Structures are given as C-alpha cells and as structure tokens.
Length: 107
Image (tube, rainbow, N blue to C red; front, side, top):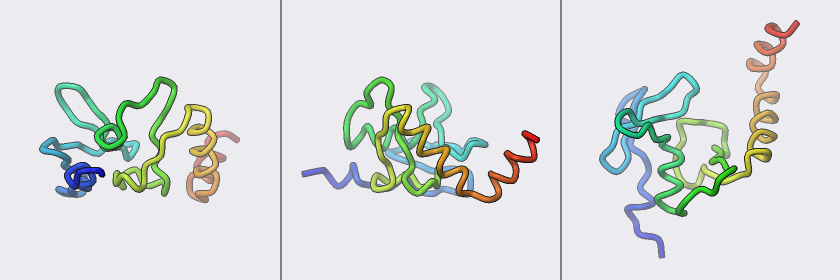
C-alpha cells in the first residue's frame, strides 16, 4: 500500500510557484517547475521518484496530458528517451499555435 503522503499533490502557491514536501519549485519558460538551490530538481521527476523509485538512465518522465504544470502522479508516465521524443513531437504538431510558430520560423 502506498502511504498517503506520497500521493499528496503539489500545492499551487501562485501562478509561478508550486510547493511539494516543504520545498518550493518555480516555473521556467518551458513550463516545467524546478527547485532553486541547492540541486535544481524538476518537480515532475521528484514526484515520480517519491512514489516509484529511481528513474533509470535513458528514461524521461512524461506529462500525459501535455500540461507541464500538472505534476500529479496520475499525469506522469516513464518513457524511454526515444518514446518521449516521439510522443512530445506528436503533441506539438497537434497544437495549431505551435505548428504555426514552427512553420513561420522554418520557411
């Protein structure tokens, strides 16, 4: 059985800050949340490691719904680097705004 404290969702402090297990994580331009000093940890990776253990080399933690602010365990999935790149590119192409921006830069 998984302890309740592990399933605790990150708390939204404000538009650019989330807190998890007593540490604050700040939103980067990419949309990911990262702690400041001392170790610059990404929130989605910390949430995954607290529940599921270590992340093997050559694996990434993917936000299933594409929302990098949604760091709940149910929205996270471990994928290999190649699977993650494929999934991320598919999600980006599905976004008309991203596609328009990409095409304007590469024409």
